[in-house]
Length: 282
Image 1 (cartoon, rainbow, N blue to C red):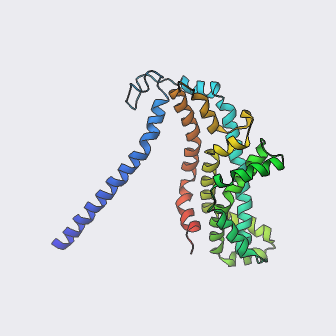
Image 2: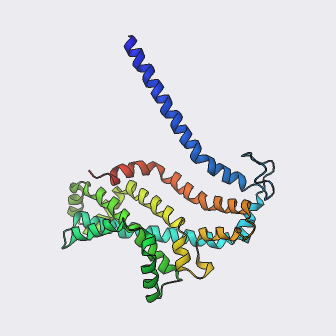
Image 3: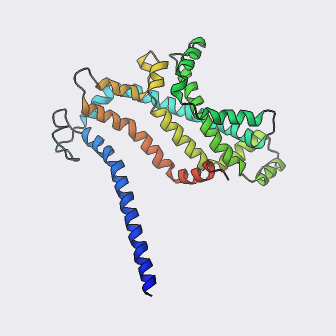
C-alpha cells in the first residue's frame, strides 16, 4: 500500500515538474507576441516608458497609419497572392512527383529521388548567385513569375519527401479498387491519393506558407520594383536613418504575423497526425 502511494506521489511530482516546465516554455514563447501587440497600441513617447502589457490608452490608429503610410495594403496583397500561388503549385507538383516516385516504375527513379533529397541540404542562400544569373538570362528577374518559380523550387524537396513516405504506406488495395472502377493513374492520384493525404498536405501547406510569407532576402534580390515586393519588405518603411517608428513597426509586424497564426490554428488538428504519418519512415 505504501509502495503504491509512493509511486503515485512520485508520478504526480514528475508530472507537476513537466507541466511547470512546459508552462514556462509556453509563456516564454507567447510573451514576445503579447509585447509586440501591446507596443503596437502605444505611442512613440510611451513605448519605452510604459512597461505594462495593457496600455493606458489604445492607439488603434497605428494600424491605419501602417496600412496607409507604409503601403501595407499593396504589400499584403502581394504576399497573399505569392503565398497562395506558391503553395498550390507545390502541392500539385510535389504530390504528383511523390506519387510517381512511390507507385510508378521508370528508369532513374531512385537517382532522381535522391537528387531531390540532396537538394534539402543546400540552403537557398547558397544558390542566390545562380538564381540571379538564371533569372536574368530568362528575363524573369523583377517579375512575379520569377519569384514564384524560385519559391516553388525551394519547397519541393521536403514536400516530396513527406508525401512519398506517406504514399509508400498507402494500401495498394485502394488503388486496385479504383482501377476496377475505371480510374487511370491520374484519376487514382486525384480521387484516392490526395484525399487520403490531407494530414500530410496540411503540414506541407503550413511549412511552405510560413516559408513564403517570411521570405525577405530573395525578394530583395529578384525585385527592383517596390510595388512587386512582399509584405516583409514593407517593414523597412518604418526604419529611418536616425529614428525608427516603433509603434508603427510593431503594428506592421502584428499584421504580418496574424495570417500565419490563423492558418496554423486552422490546420492544427491535421499537423500532428500529418507529421507522424508522413515525416516518420515506416
